Length: 300
Image (cartoon, rainbow, N blue to C red; front, side, top):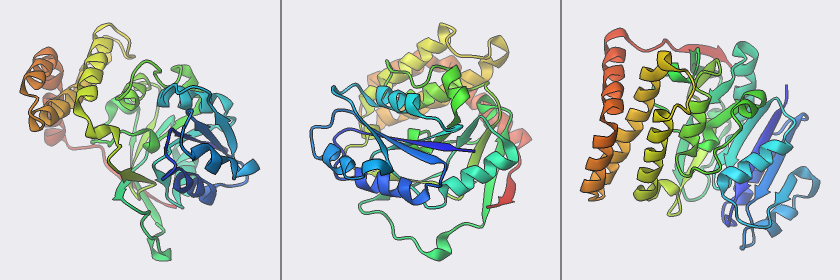
């Protein structure tokens, strides 16, 4: 078994050392660390070059966006599983131990990691923080997921063959590229959602994309149109599940738009996607009535 950790960054000199150091701390003999700098103009590349042969470094000559950078890193990878990490996030020390144990037991196509949000400096960890058990849910595939998941590139571990099978990250879509990727992987096979422990530290800061609502509203429209044009897998048999996934996103971002005073934009989005919102509500009621998929626990 082998992991390829793919780290991408653009002008993240304040954070990139934390990301790379965290990956080095979890690396095993057969784990490679690939770092793609997306044409940074700050000191990021100087910082990265100091790591020498400890990492495989690719510096792009022009800024091409996070998805292109991730795909470039993935194209260099030789590992069975791709572990993505954004340059402002960090892996927890036990992350690969958790992923490896899940792969040994379940052999999934995709693992949905659990993220711990933090602000400022990396939180201090103690020996007692190391987990002894993993709580997770085993789904036949991503479309069957019945629990919320904080979608982020840094929370995704994907079998490389499955990733290649859907042509990787969508280079023409950002943000919401992580939702698009997971939906395209929606019927690819077994998906494990980790409930505990956290495996990734997700940094909250002023530059987080999620702080800016309008780009997400535009991206939700793109997801909606991709569904309507038949670009997502599963056909008619899985349409209700896809509608539920996208409808949940429509509802969430319409609500965020209202909170930002973008009332007309929220109303338009809701009107355009109301059948999907209805499907999301129906799925929620079904889960309340029938119960969620049971959790499993294994030792780390």
